[in-house]
Image (cartoon, rainbow, N blue to C red; front, side, top):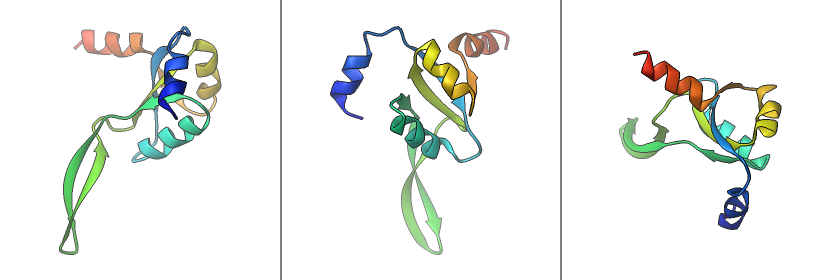
Length: 98
């Protein structure tokens, strides 16, 4: 996905949606949706982990099981066939009720 492609998509009526994934499937889902032409975002953090005495720095998603997708209402209907989708209004309502 190039910067020029992202810029060309910004003038269309898009919204950010949250695609719910399976456990530890955020990055695979992100890659799959990007191959389909969607703008996606997965916030991640660098973490140091140790395996068999070796320390390795890996990137882990900050928000588990969520991929943010920038899409139109029509595009999101196609994604709904494969994934559960949360709209920004749903997230706002969940946090306002806490």
